[in-house]
Length: 520
Image (cartoon, rainbow, N blue to C red; front, top):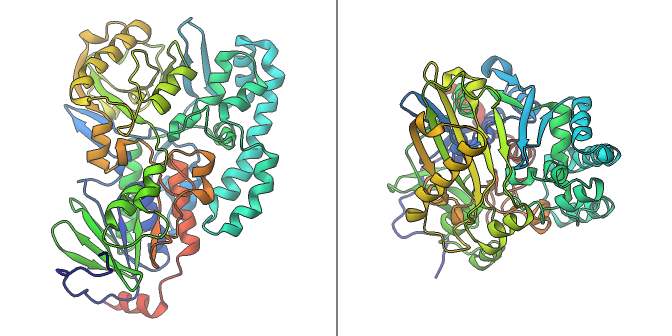
């Protein structure tokens, strides 16, 4: 029988009335801790890794710094607003550099498409590939802007946990044809299949199938055009470290190498957490930045759940897995001069390959790759004269298909290397030095991600906004969620926005408690 008590639990220590716990030091959790600190809470952030950042952390090996997850910042004002809410200056703490060329897409026929912020430059790229598609492209940009204002600035920056919130926005969803997929919308505007790819692949950056994810996500094209694409010197891990610095300056603390085993409830209210070593920490507010699936399936396993039952979680569609090969090369800083910071190598199939990944669960022989070469912007990532790369391939998550990554990883990496040598980095094999591989197994064990998915729950229309796990938990008072698996979704702008939403729904710390804390 499930109860709200645990027979071996020690008595809960007393709290000040303004103590908060954040489970997980991912970017969403760090942003949540900053927001809570600004509201007067004394925050403890708990993470099982030995560094802050979660998927946005880094590993150093042989003089190379491998940025493990996100590589770019697309909505810098979200971070600047976060810092400002804490009375700090983001640009004082982080060196953010705008990229002139965002990424270059390369197809097998040798054609290319380079994305930039300038509308004129982008129209020139479209005209070079398919002049007849220019009018459709112009319409697509207008479509993207409309969806940005509604989907990002409206829905994405406010709570969506009440059914009334959903009813209010349904007419706009219908007007903007949110039922169409991203690819279907792109296909309705341009005819060239290469351009259809260039305008529709972005949902893969947040774990979505472009042929099924709602067309609201074409707003990414406006984000890129309006605000640019940026790189933080030191990688996204440098942003995470700066966030940790703000938290400690607010009087908060980070407890690393510690794992939360359970969220504790009393009379339906979250009262703290128990760690895997048995230690109990009390809190007035508990925020989970752990994957929403892990939060409800594992951390609340000893409590009845009203909405997020095991059966309901099992019926959800999860984002794809990721195979990431991190590697260093010796003596290549001046080699491959045409290879920039980001390159997308497109495989021979698009729709059918996406079906292999998301529907069939088949590890295909062919692949498309996202290649990150930060050393062209940030020399600190590699030894002098060398390069640091990662190559990422979307693959099925562990819940579909039967891929055994213990045996499949090295053959798959070799296919990836061959593709890179043939199409982007000739002679790569003779320059390789340090190497590291992440498979969906790595995501499952390192980040406790259900099924090893790269981005939590897939952002389909009935798994977005109101239908996504809410920032205010229905399962316990005083429990909140942030991060990729909750509203508004994955990606750096999404998880930072989830903390902004949190700041609007968690009450300020009681003044009497903050005064008492200041006097201690």
